Amino acid sequence: MAWALKLPLTDEVIESGLVQDFDASLSGIGQELGAGAYSMSDVLALPIFKQEESNLPPDTENKILPFQYVLCAATSPAIKLHDETLTYLNQGQSYEIRMLDNRKIGELPEITDKMVKSIIRVVFHDRRLQYTEHQQLEGWRWNRPGDRILDLDIPMSVGIIDPRANPTQLNTVEFLWDPSKRTSVFIQVHCISTEFTMRKHGGEKGVPFRIQIDTFKENESEEYTEHLHSASCQFKVFKPKGADRKQKTDREKMEKRAPQEKEKYQPSYETTILTECCPWPEVTYVTANSPSPGFSTPTSFPVPEGNGSPSHQPEPVVLVADNLLPTATPQDAQQWLLNNRFSPFSRLFTNFSGADLLKLTREDVIQICGPADGIRLFNALKGRVVRPRLTIYVCQESQQAREQQPKHENGGDAAANTFFVYHAIYLEDLTATELTEKLAQLFNISPRQINQIFKQGPTGIHVLVSDEMIQNFQDEVCFVLDTMKDDTNDGYHIILK
Image: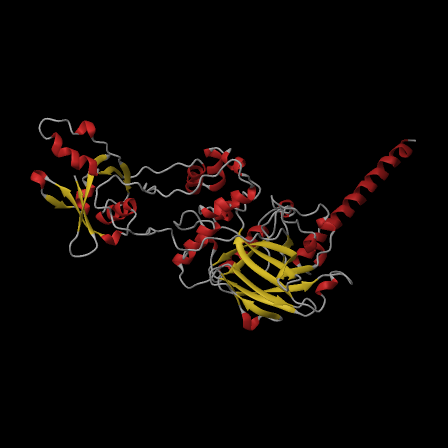
């Protein structure tokens, strides 16, 4: 009886052991695939890049994409299971990207036997750097004149037609290709990740980039503007052979981990599959060669001989862009951002109206745009004007005052019957040239018509106004202007009394 009671316990032990053996036999399957043969099914199962602004449909993972792009560079083995893959590239080395047609039979028949256009970009992965992309690229251009961030290795590429690289877009290349034919494009990335770190004191961690490919088909006007597909991947760039050393370091680091820890990381794949993402928005930046607003010379006419007070109001000295109104539409707000040199943030504020932007607090703007651009944007939104370095007030002595003054010399009060209209002039550079331009603007004449500016000194002497004299003017000092016709030409002398 005792033996009969022990039999069920023995069966349970045997059954439990079999289950454990079966589980153990399955646990190494994933590791064997990672270390050995390349499995496309495992690659396609990698996590899709999660973009905060993604508008992809919820069934994206089950959808067969029309194209597939494969970067022929190994992924890092030190990436956790649910994180996006990371690939290391060497600076200036040519890497192949295979452009694969993944369409089903009958899918997208309008591009059959036709070309499509693909645009390849190297962009920042971090949101903080995306918002300041234009400034970052301009800084790189300044430090590396004549170089490009992204280049095509045309001799090694296969199947690409009409390759182009815009000189003003250092991180972008484009080309045409036929999906029905074998196409491989070789790219070279010339920047390194540590060039865009906040502080360069040695040993800093480099920033990640993204390779993004956007593909378009022709529209009715035979322009390649209709979007078909976009995909991207994350990567870092090291100095020559640095990527190989980094890959080896990651592999050795993973080999030292316990088997339980290794299961939390992805295997290293021989190639990198670009995952579907949203198309990169086209943003028109203000280029460094764009003309800056300068002094516009008004239509000139002679200064009246009679020193009547000027009827023409001067232009504001501190040129400030129009204030953003709460009633501005999102389109108007985008234009305002572009006009005020905030184009790197236009993507972020795509759907913001004027009221939405004006509701942002100083802390909100700084958190979104960073300290430097955040303070600048906040001040622009609030319409804050920078106080000028020097303000002076000027007026022209009226002809009536001149005529009345002799009549009141015998004890009459001339000042009581004299009315002066003053105009404010704001100076930033504190130079005689700047004062000449501002006075010409006040008189609505050309600066060339003002020959000299004098200041009336002690005993009525005329002292030539110099830069040093202007720098010693008291703020908000008042002057009465007198003009004298120059007998040698059509110009004038101005006297500050």
